[in-house]
Length: 71
Image (tube, rainbow, N blue to C red; front, side, top):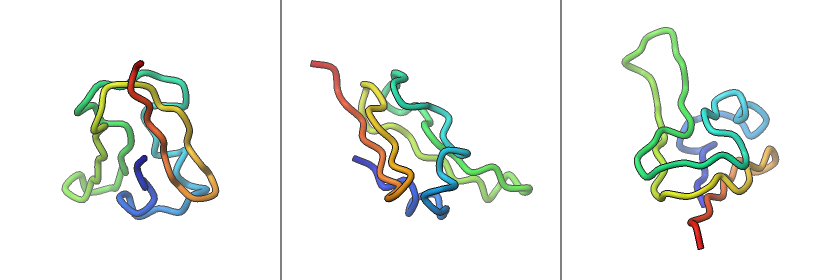
């Protein structure tokens, strides 16, 4: 489980706009799953997947993202 809201510095309702991987998509370990896109590239914040698996859910209430490893 990742708290992307805190790591990106956005609100839960804004989170879906920063997600590069959507619910149900597969991710690889180290792949960027969400990032901010500021005017100045140096201030970009990226979050990489800590595991290989699937984006199980993205909560628009809490900003928590659940990643599931394959069985």
